[in-house]
Length: 96
Image (cartoon, rainbow, N blue to C red; front, side):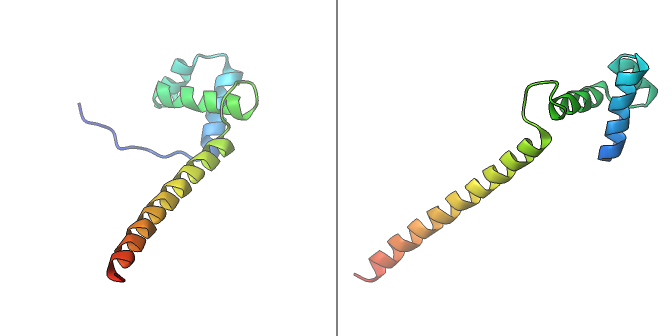
């Protein structure tokens, strides 16, 4: 069985699918089959919309984005600190 190429969907499309799940009375599986989407993707979109809407506990999309940004920044700062420590040690040996 050949793997399908990864598809990308706009936020507007995801919101429309979530609205369809809520308004149609169909299950997530039925909606995903009707639209030729994976059930896992649609379920994730519905859960994310519920968190963002305050109906479910968890990190909102904005909080997740900020957390990822801060983790990247923290990693860069740690790398820079390690480089500076090595440079300081190198120049301390050179001046002796």
